[in-house]
Length: 149
Image (cartoon, rainbow, N blue to C red; front, side):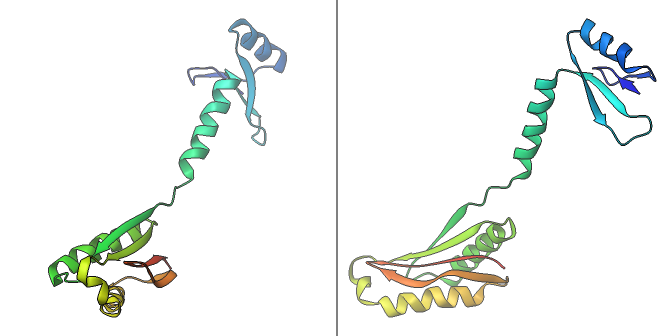
C-alpha cells in the first residue's frame, strides 16, 4: 500500500514500482507501518520526516521551572490568600515553588517571627505538596522550596 506526499492513497503496487515513483519525485520511500497487511509505505522527504518526529518528541518533554513567591513580615490575610492561589496554580502546572521572606532593616531582629509566617503560609495551603528544602535562614532571607506530591 503506497501513500504519496499529499497523503493520497495510490493503492497496492510492487516495491520496485513504488521506488521508481519516489525516485522520479526525488523523494524517499519510507515504510511507516510494517506490521499492517499489506505494509504501508509513504513517499516523503526522509530528512523532513525525521525533523517532524524529533519536534514531536521535544513537545512531549515538559520543562519544570521554579516559581517564586515572596512574602513579607507584615503581610495581610488578603495578600496571603492571593499568594496561596498563585502557589496552588504553579503546583498544579507541575512547577516547583520557592517561598521567600526577605527581612529589611529592623525586621532582621525577628527571624523567629519570619519563620512562623512562612510556616503558617505552608499550613494554609489547600494542596498536597512535599517540602524539597526545609525552612532555612540565610542572612536576611527566610526561604523554603516545595513541589507537587
